[in-house]
Image 1: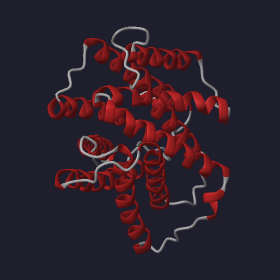
Image 2: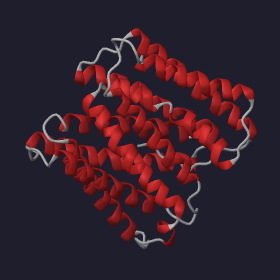
Image 3: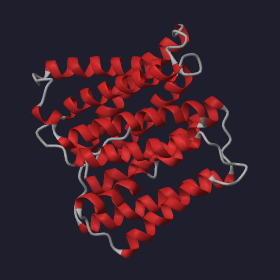
Length: 293
């Protein structure tokens, strides 16, 4: 029987890349804060309806526990900085930096969960961070201060994934989806408080935001299905296909031209991440509670 996990994971990564594209397009007309608020409200409403149809309560006692509070805080920081990053910097560059998230999660698992990492995985993690530096190139003319937002967003998402690992299994993915989109609204409100509301969306931006909500919910659904029906060790590496889709969309839609060093750094990050996953699978099965942005 055909394993549908990799196909579903690839589909979810393509949809997440489309979500970023539509949001970036909308933010060429409206502010980041307003875009996050509208996007978060749209996704929250859909997941609320979904939770109601499944007979799931909105409030779960675990929402006030330390792991969920940390997850919510990390979600806000990750979304805020990541959205700022691809609003101001090339989508291809931001997506490349985002691929280092699993490496930071692996490092955090050692610090916070006491996981044992051998020297080969330490080498892979270190090499992955070298790949990030190859893309950012601090101290050179190619360095852009806005790319720091990509790093901060990546760190926020890594913190969210680590906190998700500690969240109780009794919480459904739909409930986590509701809380995740609520945090998007919170991030948007914070941004509006700093920069103001800005112009209201016109017809084009409204369409972009509606499409972002639609593909975002579909992406989350495909991701959840991938992690449930597929063999985790076979499915998880297909997360890296997001970079391919982001590169294609960045070039085709926004006219981006990643240079050789960006391509090389991306290859180093992806290779390091895949090797880290491979070594981790030889130790024990991977947890499936991690979610991309």
